[in-house]
Amino acid sequence: MQELLNNIVAELAEETERGKVADYIPQLAHVDPSQFAISLATVEGERFSAGCATTPFSIQSISKVFTLTIALGKLGDALWSKVGREPSGDPFNSIVQLEHEGGKPRNPFINAGAIAVVDAIMMGHEPKETLGEILSFVRYIADDNSICFDHQVAASEMQHKDRNASLAHFMKAFGHLRHDVDKVIGTYFHQCAIAMSCEQLAHAGLFLASDGVNRPSNLRVVSPQRARRINSLMMMCGHYDASGEFAFRVGLPGKSGVGGGILAIAPGRGSLAVWSPGLDKYGNSLLGTRALEMFAQRTGWSVFGH
Ligand code: GLN
Image 1 (tube, rainbow, N blue to C red):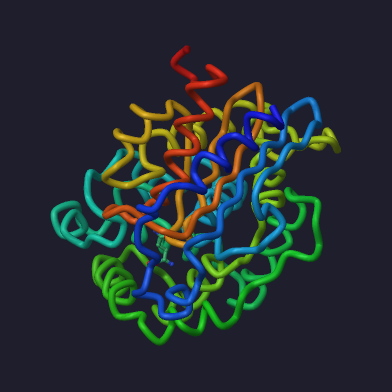
Image 2 (tube, rainbow, N blue to C red):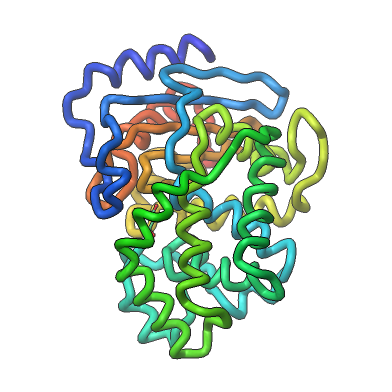
């Protein structure tokens, strides 16, 4: 396995077409696109990494998996009255479906859906408490208390909030948001600004690979049914309007972020994190996707067979 990861890193190091870093969040525009990392945490407790796997990066939309998990823990199936669970076929920051569908976002992984999810988590709490809850959860599943928000990234997004603020205002106009728009998107920007390394992220995703149980602690995070459902949402919606393409090429539940990270789950086997900051036109990591495709092809770890 270690050799396989080393080979993937070596093969992709030669690649000159690396995609384009997200520059609509100015703080992310400074990230060096030549960085690359991959980590695997297996359900048996093994760890393998190659590249700069201890370098923290902005997890961005990968955080939506964690806030969805928290929201399901709090609301259970009542969450589905606030957000749907169908792929959108539209870009992550699209507003068009919201109008046709009465302000209810299609799924928890597009921006509108994640904003609705965080609004649900905030119920009965001050924004600061919600942020504390999100960070504690991520630290718990990654078993690492050094994980933090990158406040500069959060501030950078707040300064360029118009698009996400529009989504939030639009949902609020339909009665789909309870809290003040700036408070909700401020919380959302902070969850996206959590900085984690591939090693930390692979560990954090492990409960989804092992029927809801964290490893090596063996502590239950969610029920097996909930883990299965989160995985299927990642498969169907985790890469926005390129989710079909990701399923076709990789065949694993995955969630991308515009920081260039991807978390992919091989149920029963392990959790994989990759990071390459350059993005494709859908906002998904170009080489990160390629690396996962190589991994799935060489291991046969796709959920659809070899
Ligand atoms: N924080 C980013 C945004 O709202 C998250 C988008 C992403 O990672 N796809 O635009």
